[in-house]
Amino acid sequence: MKAILDHVGIAVRDIQEALAFYREALGLEVHAPEDVVTEHVRAHMIPVGGPSLELLEATSPDSAIATYVAKRGPGIHHVTLRVDDLPAALAQLKARGVRLVDQAPRLGAEGSLVAFIHPSAAHGVLVELKQRAALGLDLSVKRLAFGDLQLTTLHDGPFRLDGGAMFGVVPRPLWEKLAPPDDRNRIQLAMRPLLVEASWGRMLIDCGAGDKMGPKQVDIYALDRTRHLDHSLADAGLTSDSIDLALATHLHFDHFGGATAQVGGTLRPRFARARCLIRAAEWEDATHPHERNRASYLQENFVPLKEAGVVDFFPGDDQIKPGVRVVRTGGHTGQHQVVYLESGGRTAVFVADLIPTTAHLQDPWVMGYDLFPMETMAFKKRFIREAIDGEYLIFFEHDPKVAAGYIRETSGKRYVEQLL
Ligand SMILES: [Zn+2]
Ligand SMILES: [Zn+2]
Image (cartoon, rainbow, N blue to C red):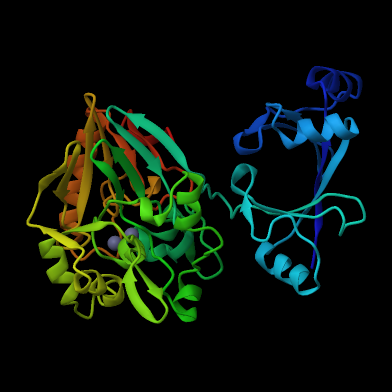
């Protein structure tokens, strides 16, 4: 395994005294601190050449850093080595019987993945292995109170799609600056289902791709299942069983593939207690695919739901629950819809594939995947004007970095002010 020194973690007792030494006496630059809330730790990074020093300050007496300092005094706490493939590194260590603190990768700072090796295996040193976040990818779980609704953006892992197909008629020199393609011309995307919690229950809007893809598809779409919807639900303190309702914007695999799971050789609804809410005409289209949309409508993603009797069909644009309303956009698929969330006098919209990323703000930047691109453009033109004027909070399902933000316009130029 190839490993590079990333940083050395130093547990400090008094951060002001530590800064007086590292910043004032040594004259080093100290980055703004980052709180790791789950660990009750505040980390201050100090770049020193390639690697960094990381000053670790406990933010609560329960913190592992507080315990460490109480027991052993301040000093070197851990050494972090960066690896390219953390799951492979852990598998290699397990195969050799190395004692690990973390059996599986967990989410570290700045969207990285980390796992600790037990100090007894590393001759008295706590070793952290770290895999950097894929370029420009942020998959952290973010919560927002929105009137009577609690909105939480989750994720079902990263994937990639062909950059040309994602931007339709727009030439590559224009889009590649906003979405740099890899060596197979694919751009980095995320799948971000949105959790809506209210007095009436917990609703998931879309649910990612799930785990049923074969190795060929996994390779084509660069599906990375290291951290997926189960992990982000756990980060939000929930499980699949916590979900009461799953609403589909449309039935493409990257939006509702996660609604079914393979359990002991049979396909079952993935959310054991949930009713699935599906637009009736979208169901008709999805179950009668043609050559042009067959690769996106995979029957195993939704047919088992109806067989299990967990689907509630609705006929058209409707108020699904207090504060949750669907509106058909067409364009991308004949029945593609967006979801309006309205509470406390504010409006948020989950726009699904109408505006898949923040790089799709210009009216003619419409995906090559869309069945009816002129319809997409007409709806989008009206909608973006409405969203700017009404200050709608927009949830971008596929953007690798921005989960939600406001679309702004100054002297004809559009941009997104990121909120989440
Ligand atoms: Zn789609
Ligand atoms: Zn999509």
